[in-house]
Length: 380
Image (cartoon, rainbow, N blue to C red; front, side, top):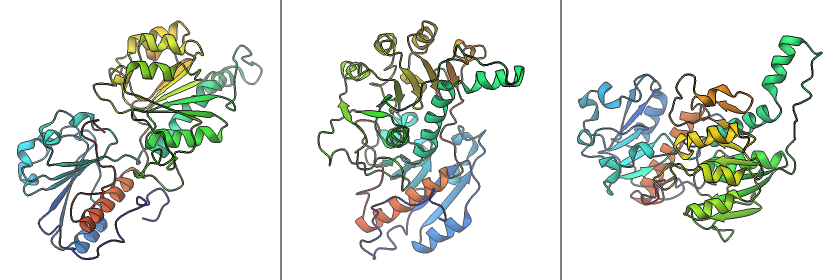
């Protein structure tokens, strides 16, 4: 696709069976995305697979969360494959067999009838986010730890004569970063943090005791991440709150939350956890979902200096109401409106996953071996 930011997943099925090009002759793929149609891409897929149809539905960002209301019922006729972020009415999609999400998380879908139908295959867009989100994590951490904003204000208001000597800057070598959820995003954060000299501790829900188990077979932009799982110096795992608390007690200088939001991870960071983090005054970075953190407990932790600071791309509620406490502490807490995922390459990567999965489906004669295939039990 002409850019190192948009290359297709590694390990695809294109080298397998070259027959069955008409396997999708009765299929219609609907892309429901906030971008105008890429006609060249549509033509290429329809020419590659005889009879295959791509129906690209362009919705504005303002209407993107209102899919059912803004799309005519006839647009759904015959659709068997769907690429979208938001759920759609199940009755409009009686022939649906595959959903390719445009997001890494599936939390809007978890109780939806289409998701609960085990005959429908779900894949995520895991791997489309890591480069830009890792830059957000490291960028906001450096901005706050190096006091860029107050130094800029000092220079703007007072010239170069005033030096804020009460501010202390600590550089990164020797810091210990804990990554709560060592998936595609966590692996790229680890890669960048390691380049700064940090030590990485990784946490996963399932144990990763062997080198083989630590490998990641999801989509990743070539040259990024930690596909072989060799960066962390220590691995932790478990599904209980006690397991998480044990991980948080590892003298972490920085904690990055990059978990999927499920019933078991809701408010996984609360008052007890902030008390644990207070020992090292851990810096918190949350780029997952606002629901992972107890907002009132976070406000208290910041006010009481239990933690060194926080960078939040997600909040609970989202957006925060005007005048919220978290918006009144720019020296301790930096908040952005859920934008860390943004990049001009995002949907190019989604299309790369779509293409790879179509080819794997064709080669394997069905939805086996798809990239980013969801585990329905864990919800990601």
